[in-house]
Image (cartoon, helix red, strand yellow):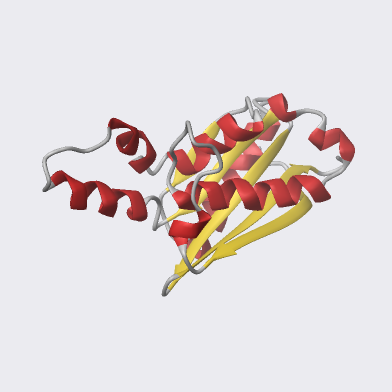
Length: 166
């Protein structure tokens, strides 16, 4: 039975130029949209109660995007014609990296999932998934990142969800 979800904190990140919003470390490549997802969830975590920040291993990651990693997929396609593609780009091109990078960068150990659809159409699905994860004890909190694109503008809205009473 679904439980009532409570938004404990909200965050946001945006960029009109994904090439300038790229990776933070020189040794690890992920699509710039995935780094925007991390930034939005970090913003939400900074606003969340201390008890949430103290338990990253109990946080699940749920990303929603119908755009995903098109930036990197386009880059891979463009370089493939020249005969060599960096293997690092293949991992960064996976749409699932929008949820996966949250776990890597922020130490989340709960379940993770990318829902490949427009966020405005995914609310019922997201709430059902997050509610189930919390009700079954798979995690204590769920970080939700909704990635939208309008023209060249990429926006990620991040939320930290918990159970009613958290």
